[in-house]
Length: 363
Ligand SMILES: NC(=O)c1ccc[n+]([C@@H]2O[C@H](COP(=O)([O-])OP(=O)(O)OC[C@H]3O[C@@H](n4cnc5c(N)ncnc54)[C@H](O)[C@@H]3O)[C@@H](O)[C@H]2O)c1
View 1 (cartoon, rainbow, N blue to C red):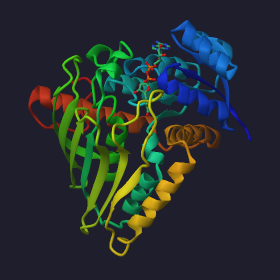
View 2 (view 1 turned 135 degrees about the horizontal axis):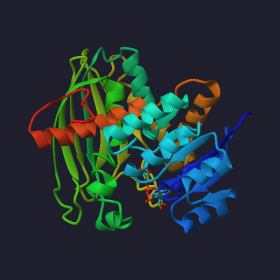
View 3 (view 1 turned 135 degrees about the vertical axis):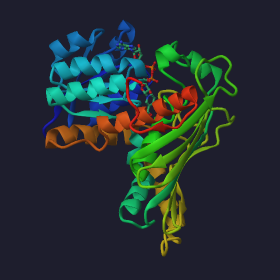
């Protein structure tokens, strides 16, 4: 097996999952880690027996990685991505790709120019019940996808927002539930339904007075295929209830996934507690499959560590994409499409109007 020299920047909570994957995948030889904190970089370096850096430019120059995984706070994804592209290094970035469309465009342009791959983490695409839905939709089993619904009733407490100084602030996080917890499901909604025509959105902070950003957001969507959609994403339910994406088709059939039961997990703090499952499956002639699909998914959940497994699958797909000279399953453009969704929701509330797609980055 040919392996790639890999490195990561961001030795924080999700960085633990990244480092474990990069240290164990056969396609990866983890050579270096970087964090602005000396202690964090040194701690990861000792644990994974690699070089430690506090400066990304020094890492790129001295450790000569071929691929870089970025797990810094959202507005700080762009700088290491541009540095990596300039050094001819492939880049996989944590969600969201960036906090602004301008940063996404800079990353896409720089990686195109350098001829390197750009990917964004959206590990729920690798969940079996999600893939099953995508295959059923692509095979035409629900006709045309005409109504897509993403609901999240989750919870984050004061301790979560106080765990790192960058959380809950417009300047250092770029937004709230839309930017941090929703990108996975915004990505799924668009993956299932296709391109967006128009978004009308609104948001508020319902019960987290100690943060600046929104804890709840709503949106109505029109898709280019003529379908409609809705988003209700909230972190205000205690305990968290569920996160679901449902797609209803032109033949009347529906498929759906509960990606998260309870509150969505906090990387490095809590684990995925319940198995992701198809919770709706009314394809004509397949209605009886739902119980078996759930049994299969529950059995798999007992055998794997879901918190790390799907991240590892996506990181492996990205490394194989480099080795096989093909696009990864989730590209930089897919990451930009999610940033376009939350940008449009913020803009729609600010300007009190529906936002046509694609929204311009400079507006
Ligand atoms: N895919 C997922 O399920 C998932 C889960 C958690 C977090 N994330 C994403 O990962 C990113 C990080 O989240 P986290 O919870 O690990 O945050 P964190 O605060 O725990 O970790 C961030 C790390 O980046 C370091 N850092 C900050 N600025 C830096 C810089 N300029 N150079 C080098 N290092 C720097 C910090 O010191 C810290 O160690 C976010 O974008 C978040 O959305 C994704």
